[in-house]
Image 1 (tube, rainbow, N blue to C red):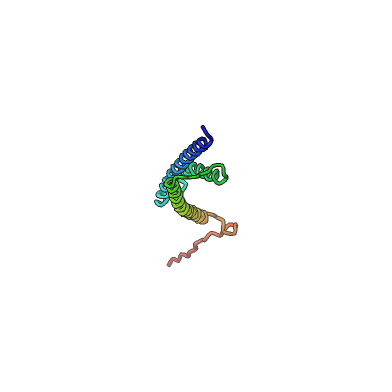
Image 2 (image 1 turned 135 degrees about the horizontal axis):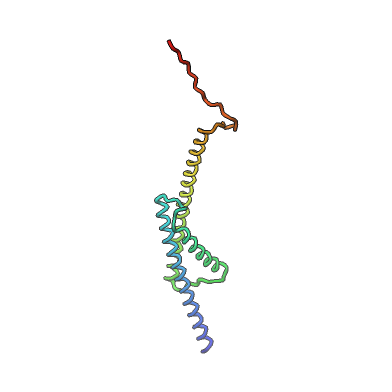
Length: 155
């Protein structure tokens, strides 16, 4: 095999492996986007973030995605996408994932705020209940009990 043919063969092999890597990344992004969208639907229903079943899987897939991006940023992996359609698909998926994650962030913040309000309401009810039965006042000293004194007059 001559040198130009070997270079051409290596270029095709690199392009094919690059395309396979891109397709794999697109598949990962699709699964992650679907999972985040499903979580967003459940958050929209008012479910607490701690009760969502997608959290662990979302975190696992997000870590894989982050590693892939970090490898590309560090130069360990290149994503030279020569196929225009494949490149457009990748960019489209990234934009969809970003939109889903932006919505997810807003919904998670709202869920956390709702959880904090519920916790505060419970704590306030506990404080009120303790204050109602406690013999101690706000100063920590024994509070004087309100005593009703009435006079009874007989005629």
